Amino acid sequence: MKNLLFLLAFAAGVYAFDFDSAVLYISGASSMEDLDESALQHFRDLHSRPLSLNSAGRSRLVASGLFNAFQVASLLDYRKRGGDILSFTELGLVDGFTPELSEALKLFVKLESSKAPGETASLAIHHDLMLRVAARKNDDVGLAAGLRYKMTLGNAGEFNWASRTTYSNPNPSLGTLSAAYYGNKYLGKVVLGHFNARFGQGLAQWSGFSLSHYSSVTSFQRRGTGFSPTGSFSPEFCGAAADFNIGRWSAGLGYSVTGRKPLGYVSWYGLRTTLGISASDNSVSIDFKIGTRNLATFGEAAWKSDGPALAAGVVWTPKYALKYGLLASWNNSIPEFCAGFGSQVADAVIAVSTKQSRFMVKYSPVFMVGAMRLAPSLRLAARRTDVWRLEARGEMSLGYGKWSLNIRSDGVWCGTLGFLAYAEVAREGEKVRFWCRTSAFFIDKWDARIYVYERDAPGNFNVPAYYGRGWSASLYAAWKPHKRHSFYLRLSYLGYPWMTEDKKSKTEAKLQYALSL
Image 1 (tube, rainbow, N blue to C red):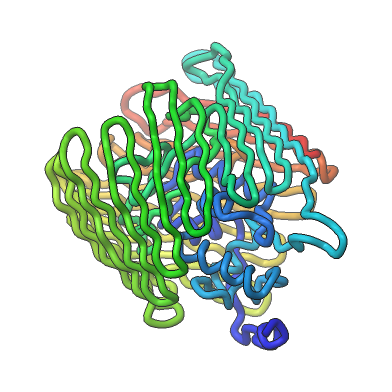
Image 2: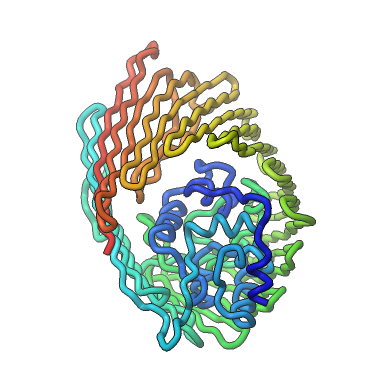
């Protein structure tokens, strides 16, 4: 069987993902602005220390957030029947996976053997430390600092410590402390300190960041991670949690001293079906997922202190590069009924929701012209709160060797017109990388503000809201003189020379050092 799989090479070229595009593909976000700091940091951690796909147990795979329930069950069954997965080509042929997903996962998982001849799985200890300082001049000079430390013990354990000061709060604190141990048989994991708890579709319990259901077709179905450690600067729970596996059953209990909140769940994992019950001090829910290679059906029914909530949906993939999704939900606490539809055809995505009358369509093909890579992108969006907000975005990326040119323009109508455009030149080498960007914007109304994702050092999530009339310039550079040492620098300026009223300019400098052992 393995020999047959290796003979099945993909004749058509598969898109080579960079970090940003891989994050968008796996998360289901339509743009980087849809994410938050904790979500992006989780992907950066996996990029720095990839998950060992052949030795990770069920609890570790689920907690990673990279896979849905069907993919986890399919992966475990495949490993049990066929042994280690030996290539990403083979991974793309596993039931529930695709060639594109396999390519995107290359940045976050590794395929080392779960057990070399005569040896046990590796339990090597790795340390990752990041230190950063920042200074900003606006009305006055502000200083900020941050620290992140992560220790991993192969797939068996991890420890996180994150602490920072900000311009508005310069007082240091102990920050976030989180430790986890992952078992191989009956014990799934034990988490001490700060943790996340995410079950079902998030109707009753979902801590931390939650991507909008209507960002894309992939985002219709949420991936509950159960209990998981966190390195977030603003964790919700602090206490202890553990889960256990017996055959296809999994059960977990947790208690957060923050809010004095007990949490628990019981799940049954089949190859095609997953059923779960979760409960806390003020809610109880039942959820299900039924998955095949072409169809995923999911739903959750919850009863909370403010009444019932329901959600159900389906994602259908009739053939390669074609996907449709439907989602409906009811929340008694608002009360509100929402329905959504999404479709993805090759490089085009459309998502429609009755919630705030949302609409989004995105077309982002990739072309190769000789050695040059062309990646145009068009995104149109609309939503209504008190008034309609209409958005149009056009992007173009030109790549040649290590050099690239990125151009973007945004137009927003929300009672008045707002406009933003930028050009960015980049060079990505093995040891030195840099991005130079300059932007101009004319936005007279706060409701028409435009959010723009800006490159920053690992551990920073930079999505400023542009408002007013002005321009900005930034330089982000990364230098890796040695495999264990990395340095990052970001310099930026934001000015408002075309404002009728006085608005202070802002200058900022960030320096960051990363040590990997």
